[in-house]
Length: 361
Image (cartoon, rainbow, N blue to C red; front, top):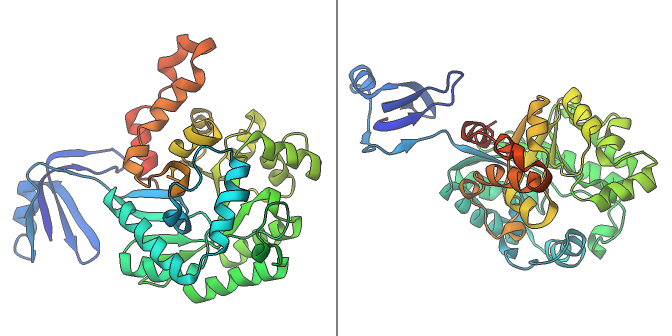
């Protein structure tokens, strides 16, 4: 197939843009990108389809790195409440009553919305019935890193979750890995999940860390979302700041960790994340609505890989990452307004930077 007469944005090392560009695709591989006349001349004789895009923009697929597929059917059920109320009294009771068929339907609906906004790959943040998710992803044609929602202690757990032991949490994830990893023609990967530090024992954290190393797979975890979380960690884990400090203390910070949100971190913890190679998923729409603003510029300056996520539908009532892309350029000046007004322009992330983190693998 040849797609031609398009503005082709490559996002290669030179960020080349072809104003009259074309792409040649062979099966599931992009084999050539260049000017339309050159691509048509070289490949027209082997192309089964030639499509004129009439000047439309052709972009790489967006990668949404924090999605709760299980929450898609719960859009609107948790508006105008703080995070702990949102979790304990709205979202977790809803999720705990889901069936595998619910998860399948919810993931289908979520996936359609993701595709509509240009997403071709997503990372599940921790949901219910991964087998249902996998069925939907295979049908949708997306790539996905799927993760079970895992907690083994703490407040607010619904009855059906509160009885899960640490062993059950660990074994269920390994079984899901064995069953679904590298399925759907290699489009599905199974990662390990830690829902949040306040509802996980040290043993669950440490053995999840070790399992991630053993299986050579990723770990997805909500990290430092609100000040209350850091307060609880300081009191219960006896550290001087919060979640990131504690995770560094137990050697949990690794290159395979995707840390979602990371709103409440200090300069020292930014250093911990950078040194360990941890990746960060920034969800600007849900941050503006409920969590507060993450220190994205500081993390980027420290060399931390930052990507974009939408979070779940009840977090912002939408799953369109293209509508979330402008928010990093908006939220940073809002956070810095008042005392740092003179530096306001410097606080904006450049458009190219925001676009780059939206397509980051």
